[in-house]
Amino acid sequence: MKWLLRILIAVIVFYGAYQYALVQMKGGLWLVILPIIALSCLAAVFLGEIRGFKLHPMAYAGGLVGTILGLIIGSLFGYVLLNINESGIYLFILVNTTFAYLGYTIGLNWGKEISQLPIFRQRSKTEGARMKILDTSVIIDGRIADICEAGFIEGTIVAPQFILNELQHIADSPDPLKRARGRRGLDILNKLRKSPGVKIEVMDIDFPKIREVDSKLIALAREIGADILTNDFNLNKIAQLQGVNVLNINQLANAVKPIVLPGETLTVNITRPGKERGQGVAYLDDGTMVVVEQGESLINQSIEVTVTSILQTPAGRMIFGQPKNHASA
Image (cartoon, rainbow, N blue to C red; front, side, top):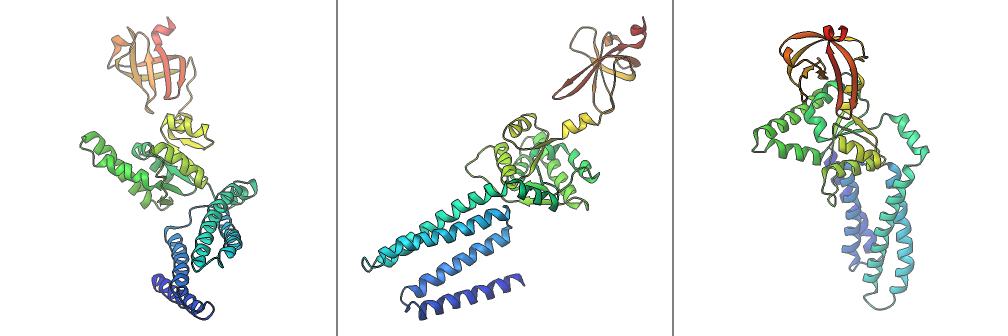
């Protein structure tokens, strides 16, 4: 039905432009030029409607105002060229087209800047939560699906097309491990898409001049005013330096781990020797590493450990302790 409506509108616009050129402009080349200009403008509107308007409305308003001002300025300059000779009309069209394009480009950028003002940011907050952009690492990790289903992530989840392309490339890799990770990522996206409480959107905005995927993510986040969901420590730091808010799943996991204080007792199973002589290594249920002094001889045994210190690192948390009987001695 939409396509029939678009075709009807296009026919009406073509007929109107043709009749205007025939009656008001005495025909000639205008019978071709004016309908082409009108249909080109209409095609641009239809394309924007089909792909979806991804920018802030103020950006498009700025582009419209810039186009109008460009046409006015172009007409003032082009009017002088009309009476030069028979080719003056072509120069008039060229000048108007150039100034209209420049006006649109400048107006669009001004509109983007205006949309960053606090008054428009407050309006966007009342409309809903900020969008969240997924990167490759957080999709393959898989925990994001459970977090979203639990209701901890608000707003629209955005999966950029260039991220999907990277996942597809990984899933087609000849390396079995990479292929499995890529397919896992695609399965996680399908799980998110089927979740009733999760709104996920595939966004086909690309930045051809930017080669690195991480840089594209940051550029997209700045373009649409969104946050980035990631597990990548380096992306986290770079994005923060550029003023983009990042939600790191690893930081969330560390934040919800049970708090352990020095002097408390844990029951762990020592699984392997540590780096230093005499050390044994165990793991809590949440994956936290526990380094046990004098625990190398207790491998494959379940023992009580007294916590002596805790080390917090960017990659997670490490707990140091020693067997309880040694600590009491």
